[in-house]
Image (cartoon, rainbow, N blue to C red; front, top):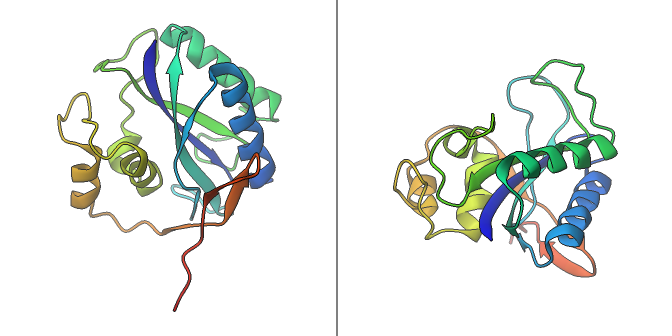
Length: 173
């Protein structure tokens, strides 16, 4: 079994698609680690806000098969691949890391560059795996988050899945 971290995002019918992705992942892999769900502004294009989170799974699939299965989950949730790369989407699931693999394999980029580029990936990853080290940079995700200096707005939201509260919005006291 290989420990894998996945990034999930949606900005179209967000709650429905994130819930469907979590269901599919839990049905396929069993117990899953789930970060808080964050709302963030679209990056790279003008669009509605996204819901983003990171999920950890123990995976029994080779990387290429996992990638194909995730694309099928996206397609099952109405993913349209005909638009520009940076555009709205029903569901986006990316493999962030695949065990300690430190280079692309089978056409899949791991670890993904987005880990250090986007707050909506790094913050939830640092939340559920603070002491895990990036396979290439050899820094923990907590250290990478502490050093992150890009201006990207994101905030935790109230979100529940299968009767459990996954995340809670910050309240101003």
